[in-house]
Amino acid sequence: MPAANDSTRILRLAARIWIGFLLAMLLMDLVLYLPQVQRAIAQNVPLIQQTSPIQPPPFNSPARAAIRLFPVILYYITNLAIAITVLASAFWKGAQNTLGKAYYPLVLFAIAATPILINAWIVPRFPPGPLANAEGMALRQLPVLIVALALVAWEYRLAHVIGFSLATSVFELILIFTKAVEFQNIFVFIFIAVIRTISFIAIGIFINLLVSQLRQQRETLREANANLTHYASTLEQLTVSRERNRLARELHDTLAHSLTALSVSLETVKAYFDLDKAKTREMIDVALESTRKGVDETRRALKSLRSSDLEDLGLGLALQRVAESAASRFKLDLELGLPSPMPSLSPDVEQAIYRVAQEAIQNVTSHSGAKKFSLHLAHNHRTMLTIQDNGIGFDASKSASGRFGLIGMRERAELAGGTLKVESAKGEGTKVMLEI
Image 1 (cartoon, rainbow, N blue to C red):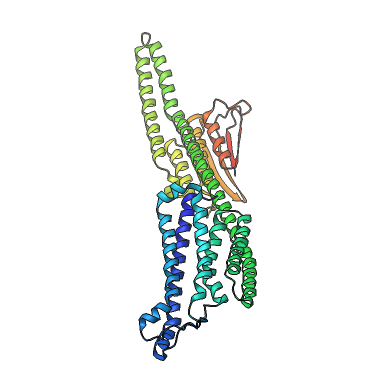
Image 2: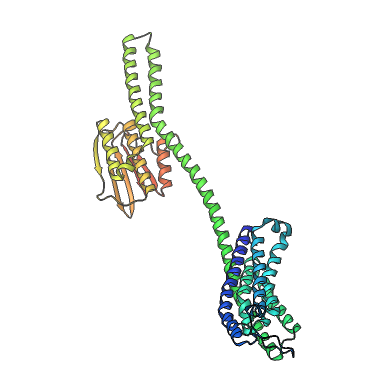
């Protein structure tokens, strides 16, 4: 069953449609009956032919015409009163709270039963007109009953829709037979009831299927929204975790290296302090120089954390700048090979390539003792980044669990859907290959 707020909104809309339909019908009846009233007054004839031997007095005033139009007036007063009551109850929470689950069925009964009862008791007393016969009675009540049918299809299941369609026709036929309508008209009412029942069942099934589909889509949307919220939370946590790992790598390559070197230097100074004053002073100068370099590298890392050349310059210029900057600072020969134009890659892939290049170049300048290095980027269905140096190398066959730089590069490669391969041997330099 749909939410109460949705049911209340639909009920308010139904009541407004009912009132609007009645006002439109009132305008039409005014157009139909006012000329008849005027002619009856002018010709001094009754609007309704009486079967009683006692004939009513002739029309000689508008007041007498109003008396003959009383059934029309009563029809609209009764209908509008009930329609306005239904609309008011849809806004009055007190009625809904008091009646509870019985509220909606009672309102549906009022909407469905009102046009049937009024059509059976009042419409036959209308002055002769296009909508005062059996067909006119069916047309007068049909829109309101369709609104009630839509409410049943919205709130309940298909069996209730079929039951409503049958119940309204049976109820109306009982009233028609009870009133002992002329024999020839009974068949007309029966025919109309059968056609309406078949039509209502078809329309009700269609509306009910639409409502079921709407609820299913709403439930799917609710689940998708919940999953999206969960994914957003997971992505946020993953982003924080990645940034922490990146920060750990940056601190490892700057502060950790600098502080380790400084610690070793100070231990050496401590050992030589009483033995060789000149050597101690020389070692202090080396430690100070190492500290200054560490400060510079830390500032560079902090600057890299705040802003990225990749966002400002694009992948090609960003790779060129990081490679040329390292070559210039450490007096290294550089061989640079970048495609022109640069391939169109997703932001995640570009970020992975740039960060791996940064980390690899940092390892070249900090650990390899190389005199030259090269950076090449190629793209042909796959993107390949290659960074190679002629440094001291290391034994790549041993576990790299303690090498935070290599671990970080592999993490970035995997997150971008690629693979990282490192080839190195002692005395033969190092070659880092990223393939995405």
